[in-house]
Amino acid sequence: MSKFAKFTVLSLLSLGLMAYVVYAMFFLSSPDDEERCSVVELTVEKADGALVFMDGTDIEKMLKNANVYPKGMLMKDVDTEKIEEIIKGNEFISKVECYKSANGKLCVNVEQRIPVIFVIPDGKDGYFVDAQGNIIPNKNSGTNLMVASGAIDEKYARKELADFGQFLQQDDFWNNQIEQIYVMKDRKGKPVVELVPRVGDQIIFLGVLDDYQKKLQKLKTFYEKAVETVGWRKYARVNLEYDNQIICTKRK
Image (cartoon, rainbow, N blue to C red; front, side):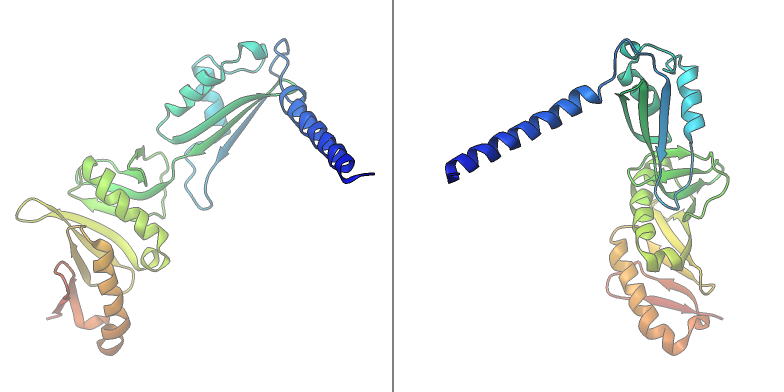
């Protein structure tokens, strides 16, 4: 067989295989519109170790309350866009994908928001904030997240604390080192931050959250060099607010 003939046969086989794959995707797996929805597969995804705010039972209840739960409906009458819209309206949900499958099955895949910090403003109930700055109500009573308390409004929580909380959560050293964040107002009314470490009982004054990565790097260097020599007990307060210097206040 000539090279041209071999090429032609292989090309025809490849085209035939592609045609079958397309057919299988669009016809064999597509639902029959006259079929009734017999299975609703609800999958609620979350990251390892993340808090669980909702499960499949909660999603099912949500759809039933909105009169769009599809089980028993004709597949042609199931409105996947409407189902997605209702689920997306919940503050705990970040992403929804809903689609019809063969044999009367409807698949609903849901992703929860992942909080990065728990905020307790003065005189108000606490809430979670995710990395995108979305406020998540405190439905879960327990948390191992970083806690920020003090003079905090929602604007500050959504931006500065969301960014800072995400940084701390993603950095193993600081996530293990810092126990709590306290926010207060300085004499000019600007929010400034104190950190409470897990090791030692001194206060770390960060100041405003501008350049917090640079300030924390200074503190890490201080840990690695100075603390090994003099120990933590010598200092009651470590001030990082000024460029290129660390001001340590000794215990009385």
